[in-house]
Structure formats: C-alpha cells, structure tokens
Image (cartoon, rainbow, N blue to C red; front, side, top):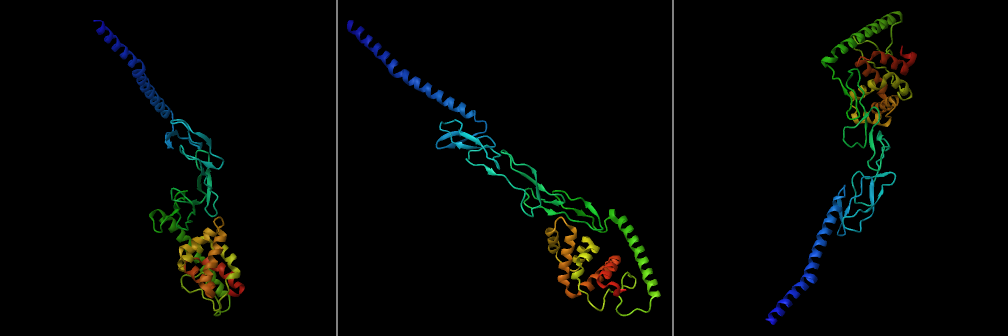
Length: 319
C-alpha cells in the first residue's frame, strides 16, 4: 500500500513539473507570436497610402508630394520621408527616393503658356496661347487658328479646336454672299464707267496700256514690259492683305504647308506673314510675277486692288 501511494505521488509530481516548465512556456510562446502578428497587422493597417516591400520588410508608402529618404528598418513601420525639392513633384504615394521634374511650358515655338503652377503634389498644367489650338490630350505644340475669308466664321477657334469657316454656298451665308455680290457689281460698274469716260477724254491709247477694272470684256492684265516685283513687295502686301494673298497662292498651286509655314514664322504679325508669302510667290513665278499678279487679281474680281497694285508697279506710265 505504501508503495502504491509513493508511485502515485511521484506521477503527480512529474505532471506538475511538466505543466510548469514545459507546457506553460509553449503556451506563452504561442500567445506572444499571435500578439506579434496582430501588432504587425495593425501597423500595416495604419499605412493609409499603402505599403511596399523592401529587403523582406513591409514599409509604408510616403505621402503625395514626398519621397523616401531612408527605408523602414522594422516590418510594418514608416520609412523616413521628406518633401520633394523645388521644381519637382510626386502626384502619387511613393516608395522612390526621387521626385519627377516639373514640366516647362516655355518651349520655343510651342505656343504654350502656364495655366497652373507646378506644386510638390501636381505637375504644371500648360494651355495654348490666345488664337492657338491643339486637339490632343497632352499637347506639346499649339497651332495658329485658321483665318476665314469672305465666307465668314462658322465656329470660333477654341484652345482644343481650330476655326471652322462657312462653306461657300451654305444656306446660312447665301444672304451675305448676295449682298457682297451686289456691292461688288456696283463698284465694278462705277469703275468701268470711270475708265470709259477717262478713255474718251484722252487720245487713243497705245499698246502699252494695261486693262484694269473691266470684267465685261474680260481682257487680261498683260503689260508689254515685265516689272520687278521685289522692291514693291511690302507696299503691295499691305494692299492685298493675308486673305487675298493666301487665295492667290492656293490658286497658283502653292502647297498648304508652304502657306502655313509663313504663319508659323510670324505667329503674331499678319503683315509679315503676307510679305513672306508674297516673296515665296514671287520666287515661284519668276520674272512674270508682276504680270501674273495683276492677271489673277482681275480674274478674281479684285479690280480695286489690281488698280492699286498697277499704280505701285507702273506708276504714271501705266495710265
């Protein structure tokens, strides 16, 4: 009986020792591990902008407008962040040690201007200058708005769309064209009458006379002697204007790209655009430039301008 009691007591002692020195530490370790996992998860949840992995650790992302100075040293912790320097930005939470350079709107011949200044959290916003447009979402260059002639403007130029001109013959512009046509006919009638009376009062004309202002007999403006156009280009360009000069250039077969280049070369000066285009037109026509200019003006019913150009080129000898 005594032996049984001894064995039972020994067994109970062994169980007590195992529970105290073996089971409890393992239970405590499990609890400690679970608590560590919970704390790590809580830290990650505190990363409002998200996380990134770095050398086996999970770090919080730096806020918008900041960059990483030093990565985190503890899993689930914040890195050391700093603001982007002047002239740079980060528009998204970042794990990079650098920021993006701000865009400049001052590129040469891009016709851009600054709409919104660059900040640490946002890039510069550029827009087209006045009377320029660009139809792309991200514009690197803006183009001069088209100028409409006598047909008039259908849709005004905007920063994203070019001018839309009325098409000749549109119902909405018929009335305007009728009015212009009547005015032109009246002017032509007066000019024809004036020329007829002038001829009556003079001696019989010679072969050197230039026929200007008459559309009824459809005579060509062809002088016997060609006159050099170059010395008179600025004065003639002022008489013609951009719209008339552009129509003459198109009628003579010049490419639109050649014409548009004149506008690009002088984006803010219509007079210089006209002079540039007239010089290119003269180079194309050669020695017959003056003769062809008068002829085309008459064919296009620009008799008053033809009369002024004739006076510039031939002076009193053209009378």
